[in-house]
Amino acid sequence: MNNYFVILAAGKSKRFNGKIAKQFFIYKNKEIIEHSVEKALNSKLFKKIVIVSNNLKYFRKKKYPKSITIIKGGKERSDSSLKALNYLKKYKPNNVFIHDAARPNFSNKLLENIVINLKKNRAVVPVVNSTDSIKYKIKNQIFNLNRDHSLLTQTPQAFRFKDLYNLAIKEKNKVNDEATLLLDQNYKIKFIKGENQNYKITYLEDIKFPTTYYGIGFDIHKLEKNKKLYLGGIKIPFHSGLKGHSDGDVILHAIIDSILGATKKKDIGTYFPNTKKYKNIRSPKMLKLILVSLEKFDLTINNLDINLICEQPRVSKYRDKIIKSISKLMNLNKNLINLKGKTVEKLGLIGKEKAIACEVIISITKYD
Ligand code: ZN
Image (cartoon, rainbow, N blue to C red; front, side, top):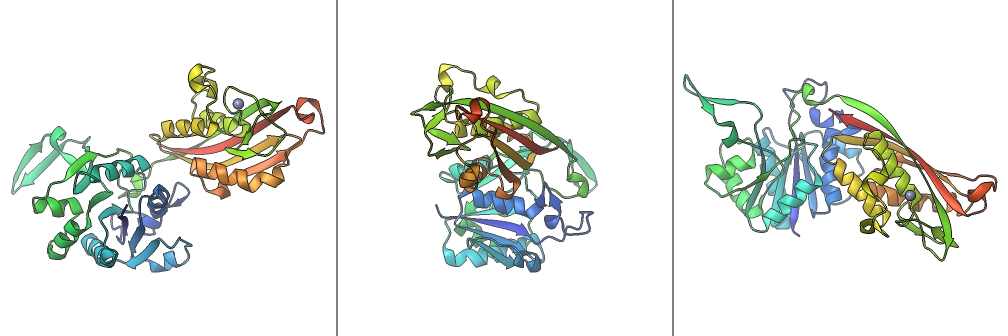
């Protein structure tokens, strides 16, 4: 893997109506650019991420890992892109991805898909069909363009570094994207299916209206001797484990139900009935399947609050570990997760250490 990711964020956002450059506008709980930075970083597909920006002051405050470098941008998009390529040359990259910071909504799946296609192709560019009718003008005549034959290019676009570098240093025109550069030189590009959600934010109006929803989840499982105890996706040393069709992880089950609640998608039993197929399924897998099924919706989790109800084990002892595990499983910042321990004064089944229960509340913002 010798892939490098370039994020172009030097634009002045002339068409954006906000008071600040759009890449620093708060969108879904963070600056627009941070979505691309986090996605590239979390994908673990890149050796280095290069951010090209003219607002170096903003980045000075950021505590990024070493694999992220900030360089100063140029006047036009193509100048910034060339600056990044010049900077990267010394690393001898195999492939380089060029991405516009104004597209914060691409999925990890798209990145993976590009990587797969790069194995057999020298250039990979995601495209979508236009939903608007398109006309084009030559001199004073206007022609219809067949919508089905017109392709709108998106980013990230990926190339063999050498190809792109050699073309970019020679190019005199200010091209709008790297695909243009290659097409002008009759280079072959593999066009793959892009994502409608991966639209470019150009105008303030492009930012969709958010609505916040809440979901509640509850679960309880009996404890049983000689079983492993799983809570929040990790194994906890204990005299008993939770009995169930799956591994009985009450925390993850309650989280799943809270997500399904907030998104109005029924309950955990609908997706994981007590059938042979799901016998002994691990709960992280269940959570992952639910999260993947929601990827096509434009959702952001704002926070997660968890009550673990049990006499033993002590939550305080495992709190950090459990939060870390949930954060990893859900790709959610640790600071958005809270875990409380609640004992029940030795009352009932839970008090006698014969069961563990959990309740969760989640807040999710949907953009539509
Ligand atoms: Zn359960």
